[in-house]
Image 1 (tube, rainbow, N blue to C red):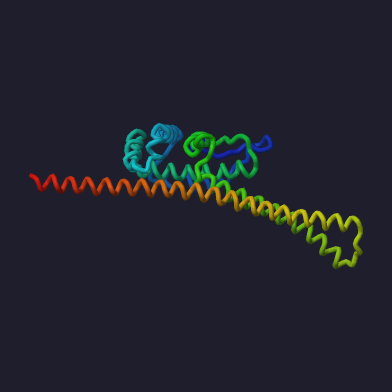
Image 2 (image 1 turned 120 degrees about the vertical axis):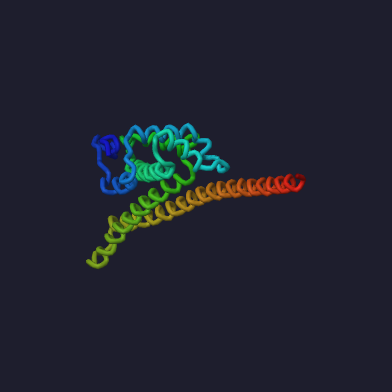
Length: 233
């Protein structure tokens, strides 16, 4: 694996290396049978970008596209498909890291290419949004719960120690109540965001199903045409 394939992210003026073990497990699973270098990977991804509309078209067989790309980079179609998926997992991990830590720049050389693949008109595809939403929700809820736990623990300690209420204690109770209200707001916001993503996914599923239905009807009509053609011979 070349040095350019190591994953780094820029945070607080330092590059924090991601879990190298996980990276190697993900990106080099297929390297035992097929060695990839940065040139081959870049060529494959650029060809994917050139055929992006075809890859997004449910009527086009992805296998045929990978055959053409594989021939161009000197790899098998299955090897190209597997490598693309492995790199996608790395992209998703970095994207989650970016959204969690607020990193403005990522050094991984293929990040921008995957952004072009999965970002349409400035908006990530529903599949990617779902992944981002999952890690975002986990972080928000964890922080809210930690904040609430801190407030309730303080109130409990006051009660156990037998301290009487004073203005400071009352303020602490108000803060705790406010935190509970914040958690409720965050929960409702999460549900709304989840619902929006699910609605987008449902629309995509309906489009694909409708497209498949139309394709099946066309195939049936074509078969009928061939049968009549054979009968008239």
